[in-house]
Length: 385
Image (cartoon, rainbow, N blue to C red; front, side):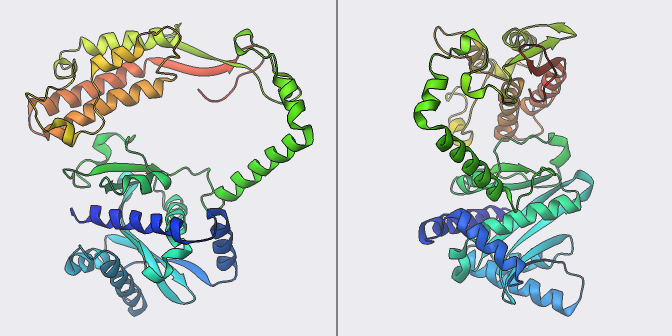
C-alpha cells in the first residue's frame, strides 16, 4: 500500500499549480463551482463496484485519470484498489465527463476512512476542482457517519493537506486505527476531523460575509474613531474596551481545577508532568534522543519532543508569555512524544511498550484536570476553554 503516499504528493503538486495558473481567486472559483452545480454542469457522484455496467465504466474512467496523473504508480495496483468492492469512489463529473475523483476505504466500525487516490485530469486542474472534490468528500463523510479522514503524506504533500484541513497530530486513539491501515516509514500520517456543524461547501462564502461585515463596520466608524476608542485600553487592568461596549463581548478568565480543587493552569500542568516524569515507563523519554545511540533519529522524526523540553516550556521566562495556553497544547506534546517513540522503534520491543503504557497514563492524568473559560465578572457561563 506504500504507493498511496505517491498519489497524495502528486495531488498536492496539482493543487499548487492551480493556485499559480488560475487568474480567479479561490472565492471566485468557489462561486463558479456552486453555479455550475446549480445549473447541472458540475456533479459529484458516488460510485462503487456493484457489478453494473455504468458503475464499471465510471470506475475505469477514474482509473485512467489516476494512471495518467500518478505515473509512478503501477496500473495493476490502481485497478485493483479502484475495483475493490471495499473501496468507494467519488467522481467529479463536468458536462457529462468524469474529470477527477477520489477513492477511499471506509472503516465503518471505526468511523474513519483512508484516502487511497485523489486526482483531477490535467485539462481541468486550472478550474480548481481538487479543493471542491475534497469538500464534497467531507460532506459525503458526514452523511456516512465518517468522523475522520486519514492519509499518509510525504514532505511534498504536507502543505497541501494542511490547506485541506489535515493535521499531523492524530487525535484518534491509536487502537482505533492501528491494524486497519498500514504504517509507512518516511510517511507522515495526517488526519482531518469531520465537523458535522460545518458546511464545507459554503464555508468560504461565510468567511467572506464576515470579512465584509467587519470592513463595513470599520468604515462606518472611521479609522480615527476606532483608534480613539481603543486608545488607552490596558488589558491588564481589565474592563471592556470602548469600541466593544454595547456588544456581547465579555472579558473571560481561564478556570482550572484538579481533582475538584481550583488550581492555576501552570500548576496543573506542572503537577501532571511531575507524575508522568516519575512513572516507571518514562525512562526513555527523560531527555532528547542522542544521535550517538540513534544516528538517524532526527532524519525519521521531524518534530521531536521529550520530558526535558516540556519542562523547559513550562518554566516561566521573564517578560515572555507562557508557552502552554491550554491543556490541549500540553497534551499534544506528550502524545507526540509517545507517538514518535512508536514510529521510530516499531512494535514488539520495550520502547514501544513503554510508549503505549505511558500514553495511557498521560491520558488518565490529564483527564483529572478540568479547564473551562468563564466570564471574568462572573455574570454567566461561557462555552469554550
